[in-house]
Image (cartoon, rainbow, N blue to C red; front, side):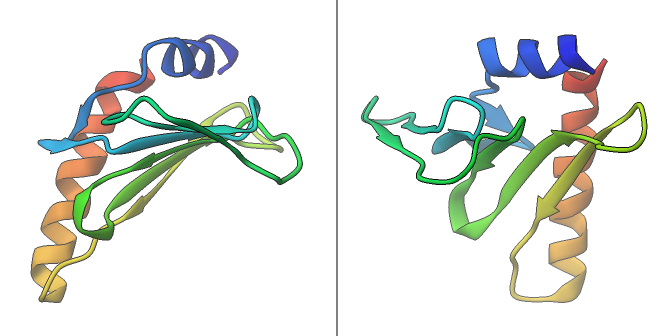
Length: 102
């Protein structure tokens, strides 16, 4: 788990599910990187081993190790006009994230 999180931290994806990553929030470093401008802004929350990827249209992916089990958890936010479109987007995001978790 540690090596996966370290790899994601060092080599953040530039695209997930065909969507450009607009920002990466690293709660362990307490900073958010705007991938377009390169601007770094502080996160004023307790440090935690969590990475959040901001995608267009309010879509996003959050990755963190489980606190009780030896696994990594991925949380998806998929926004669309219909439930079916949102489910399709979530499936695309989830499938694409699998390649980063090996």
